[in-house]
Image 1 (tube, rainbow, N blue to C red):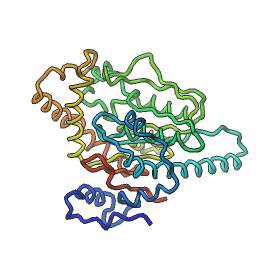
Image 2 (spheres, rainbow, N blue to C red):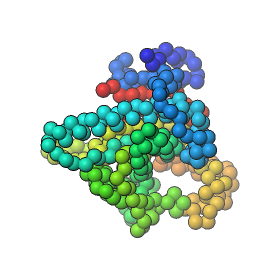
Image 3 (tube, rainbow, N blue to C red):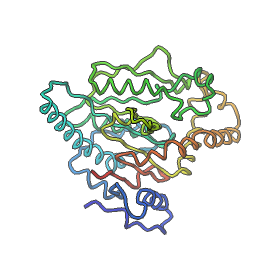
Image 4 (tube, one colour):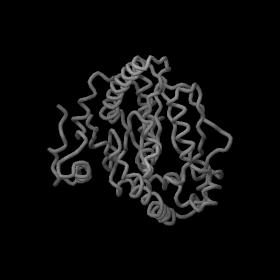
Length: 338
């Protein structure tokens, strides 16, 4: 049996975040999740094989998001094994439904959604998961798309007064994102997604990413688990998450994520921001003190608000939650009960 989190001592300062996480998911001792500590989750790896080298892992990790082979073996190999089992079961259900309907529809992709705050490590987690799933014995074709490309262009955001809410639900072309996911689930052989440049901080007009018949698609973004306001007349209204077969939320305490964001901002001043083409190039020329205060201001005005008002409230809609500690390592895992 995997070790439950309830044995952790709340007096241990290093476990305060875990204790808070437990309390949030288990109000009055009742939870739709099974909770695991790091060691208990690791034991569920079973026969899952490590297919990444240290060099490959280094290429997958994002700036300011340390990732070790031990972390992959402890956290992501059990997840890849779980998904292998879920995908196999979903395929069996699909074939059973085909038989019931006497249908010859082609197999549709298994879609995994990955949500979480800015700077929490979603991109690294998504790339690692893609690599591990692509390395499964069946060699599935795995694609990864971020929702950044579905942000409204900066010109539109500026015209509508939304630049200070970039990354909030209202800053996305949700209709286009839903159309993309619908086309994927329909089994179309080629589906296009708009491209985004973090260098110029904008959608690249007239450039597209082509997704061709993947077996698995990972969709990574801030608000992919965000529900829409339900209509009182009962009319159908699709959510982005309606198209997900499985969803993951990358979690950490807000104070920890804030620190990661500020550290990343300061490091980017020495790297990407130095490029004259960068939207944030101006921040590479100000003093360290000014840059630090600027990063705090951006967090307090935009990213922190988005986390509290839009992203964190979707946490309990996820099938799996990975809770990280201050050292970026996952300390606790919550898996939704079937």
